[in-house]
Image (cartoon, rainbow, N blue to C red):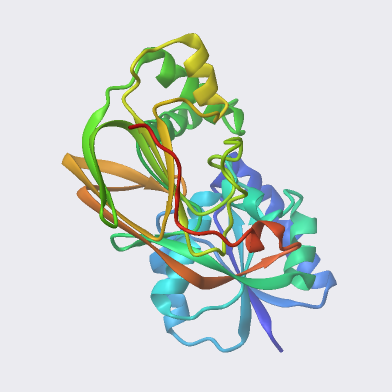
Length: 317
């Protein structure tokens, strides 16, 4: 009988995965669905653990369900692609950010998420790759990395820092204190930007830029990354800071759609993928792998999107 492989990171979301796990397993039992559970000690350990497990050859599994946050989900995606065993992936969100599932329309309620895994639709989605690491949702460099580091620090120190508001708090603290721009060269095809940037983000999904009115709805299956380049701010003001916090456009922000990009830095720097730190490295080569992994979801709008061509949506010259 087909079975579900459950990957659960019990440290995700300040204990939310631990609370959700019995609800999830009971829901599978009520549905008469067999399952096996593997528990990685950390989000970072998920990819090698899953790669090794799938490499042993386990034909009884016809799907994978991940319980955790964006970092754990990223580990599962890397484990699936590294092993070459492309089983449909179901997601039960229990992290702090849960950015990826918001693109997919998956509810936070564990039992409702299981219902989708049992009866939802399977759709292939794009996967980003940077150097030797895969990402399902986002790659970030510069200010974006500092936000992740501050969020990790706040979550380690304060119990209140266990929900999405901690990201806005970290962003506000960093924007208020100032952030030094860094020299960078960004190459997309024959176009090259050389200058100083505060942040570079490549998104494969809905969240970054969802309020940029010039940008059509992002998609997880259109074969393109949305590349955001925030150059050095010419002036600092409260109005500009609040617009950045609300993800609204400023003159220094350009958005470009592309299938590949090379980022070369003046020195080795850390990046982030799906909320997990990557590197450090001096060069980051990004590409998009069309429809590389199958995801179980309730409804297709965020996946299907609108066919579009690589284009520059906004540009500062």
